[in-house]
Length: 352
Image (cartoon, rainbow, N blue to C red; front, side):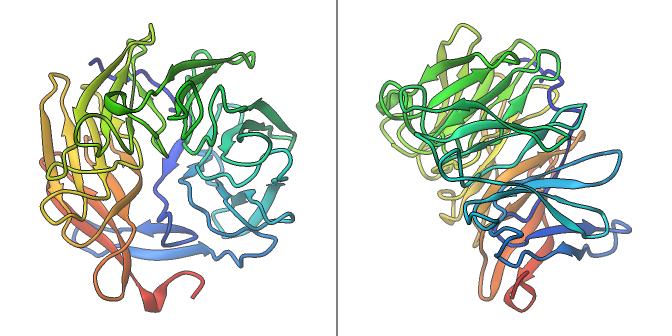
């Protein structure tokens, strides 16, 4: 495994408290102080959108945040929105069920400011799309079952070629999902169809990451060997799939979101189940194949994509917690030390 190619560096990813908060910023003025929450915008569930489930992408020049909502909007089936640093929200696009609907992942942004994403539903099997800086919405590909169904992951964009990579939850040769490439000239190719069983099935929200040699890495939610609890895979440029790790339960189970890859080729990820307390784990998979559980979550289920720092540490969120908690924002160091940065309680839940 080689270090990651510089992909998506023009878009600064912002950690969103996916299922917990709407759009928010978290600020820490010094390491000794606690993190504080500043809510930028609370969605009303109407024309402004409802249930922003994906991570946010930030324009480094303006500080504007861009994202999607699964529901709400003018047609009730999702939106693309912008939130300014001062908390002003603007709906940039309202999805239409017959064209493509219910976007379940965040967006990627090119250097010109165009936005790219997927919508898992609508049409025959979901779409991949582009929203230009002028507000022109273009369907780049309409999925049709044979080439995949239900794209639910954030796309990976190669800044050099402009190609987009992603996964579909179902469809393909065995209805177990696909890995695909959508070239800059809108040519679509299925790079791999999962077959189930030992091969893996259902990549869910995983998506893929790429190393400098063009190899892709991701995870599937189920199957992946005799344990049937998911796996991490490598897909070579020639389409050869290699299973790097099969989850067995104590080491994690059912990864919903794919791993990130650091500068030396380590894959870092999380599962919402399994581990010492059956509340999920954070893990590292080294280039030589060594698998390490970095952290066993005790009562929280890690959920959503991870945000990788240059130091190799990651930020992430959990879906739920103990008592009246609705999840936490956590920081995980390279040595596995975990620190809760923000705890979301029922009394302060956004929209409550």
